[in-house]
Image 1: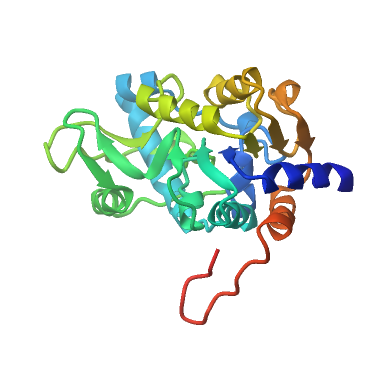
Image 2: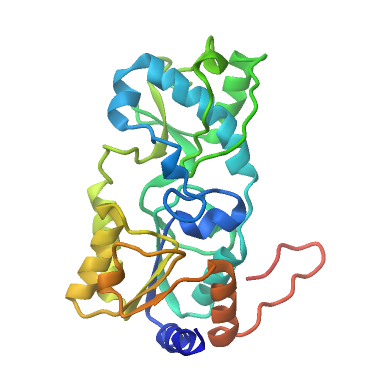
Length: 288
C-alpha cells in the first residue's frame, strides 16, 4: 500500500489533476452509494424520467419519499474526503472537479467551479416555464400542503429518495410551480433515462482533455455517464488513478488503483502534497 500511495502522491503532486467523483465519496457523510460497501442498488430502483413525467401516481410517490429524504440530505456535512479535495484544489494541484453526486458537498467543503454532471438536489425546476427555485422553498410549500405527513425513514438513497410503503404516501399532495401556477416541478437533477445537457458534457470533456491526470474518487464507473471521461483520458494517454472501495469498470483503463477508505487516503494525500490543513479560527468556518 505504501508504494502505491507514493505513486499516487507523485501523480497528484505534479498538478494538473481533474477529479471525477461519485457516490462513494459521500458515504462517510452518511449518504449511501449504489454499488459500494453500503450497496443501495440492491434495495432501491431509482426513479426514471419517463415514470416521473408520465405517471401522476409515480410522481406523487417520488415527492412523498423525496420530501422526507431531502431533510436527511440537507443535514449531511462534507467529510474528510471532500475537505481534502478542496485543499488539493486550493493548493493549485486540482484544476477541475467533475462530480456525479447531487448532494452539493464538494461546494460545501470549499471547492469552487465544480461541474455537477447530474445536477443538484437543492434546486427545483419547472418543466413548463423553466423557473428554478430552491429546495428549501419547495420543502416549505410541501409542509404546508401536507401538515400531518410523517413516516419513519430508515435509509436515504444517493438521489435523496427513501423507501416507503404505499400506505405511507397515500393522500400526499404535490404542488405545482409557484411562478406559472400549473407547471410540473422536478428536482434539477438528471434522472435515469434522462440525458445530461450536451454543453455540460462538453465542458467535462474539455476539462479532461486539458488535464495532466484524472483522479477518480468513489465511483464504480458502472454507467457510461462517468466512464466516458475515463475512456477519453486513456485514449489520449492521460494517466488515470482510481481510489474506490471495490473494483470499478474503469480499472482496465487505470494506471493506478487504490482500494481503501477515501477519507483516510485523501487526507493523507493532501497532507503529503498540499501541506497540513489550516486550523479553523474561532467564530469562522473551517479553513480548507
